Length: 600
Image (cartoon, rainbow, N blue to C red; front, side, top):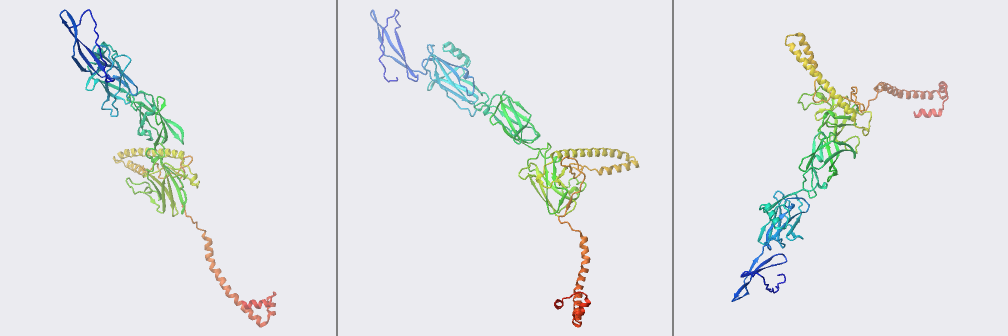
């Protein structure tokens, strides 16, 4: 068939001891290069007896049959690839076929499809090739699947529309004898498709994914987490069971600092949850390792933000006590959270109050109250900026700079509100006039915070005791006990004199502390001096009184002296120069005298 020319086939007569039946034929199969062909059945010859002799007579009948698979009586599939595979790894299954004579037969034509389930949208459909092996009648199909999931394998044998489904059993032996094939078919129980589970391969660190809000951003004192998802090299999720660890390291000016404890939990589905909590805000490095090696992208950068503001820890430092009109003075306010971390955003309300007088406290709900109910100094100008500190080239988290300018001298007390609550720690830097030399007194501020806490606790305890005693006293007063009633009145007065002000951090509205030791400083009144210092007025009064007298004397002399000289001139003219000179008793240049008198 390949050349289009068929050779002449000659019959050869063979004498046997037992003659064949009266009619017999022959078969012939012609195959092309693809294994497709036709089956010819020819009647052959018939023995014809004439008289006493028998002779074969050639017959011309011929029958033609189209072959689906040449002489295949049965085919069965076996092999592990028909039930379970590993993503990315080649797997095999085998097909054994026998012809109608129960003999192994080559030349079979197969069509294999590998289709994924609907749940795997990204999984492709494969059509692997089946090839003959060195063993006659045994065929091999080798393929690999990269995407894990559930697949269905269908196998057809035949050509065109004339195909049969190949059944079998994945665990049966791959034998080519008819008994092995029949055993595989029996185990297959007539199945027409094979369900294959493709599992993920080993975890591949570069493809392992780490994600979650807690990986890059967290808040001090708040539990955070991130998720580690193990993947193989084909990005399939693995089953789990790997050794996963995470190390969080604080970065102190670029250098490694302390490490934060964390817990990693295997979720038994290929994912791992890392949970941690730290009270220190700042920059961290997060190193995630799987089986002792970094995963892709590790280490990661983590920023831990400060918690919400805690007014109890806020403090102010700068020029408070000795100020002058006409100059700008600076105060810095440092805001912190409950763990002492600097706040990292401009989210706070800072108010500056220059008070002529400070009251005993504002009434509850009185939002317009200033200076604790006292008097506000209006002759002051303020400017508040965020993120500024002593060093103008740096950024200061959570710090506010207040520039204030006083127009009039006097004794003013400065109060600073943080979110409507008066802060309790003030540090005067008056002995250092250059603000660039100031440093935030952190240690002193911590001691000040503890001092205020204890002071307020003592005041609260004392108040509760007094309230309890007053309650007992009131019960006694109801019995018309005059002495008890008088004692109750005294207790009530004492109770009113020690109110608990929710707007104060400490017991006092303003308390100065030593910037180095943090110890309370004796009460000092802030004084604002005028820029121009008035001179001593006593000297001015002296001249104011005597100047008119002196001026009057000078004026009188200006009148008397010309008159005297005029009289002298007349006398000289009448009595002569020499006599006058003799009376004057001192030498006189008469020419000069005449000249001067004339000119005068």
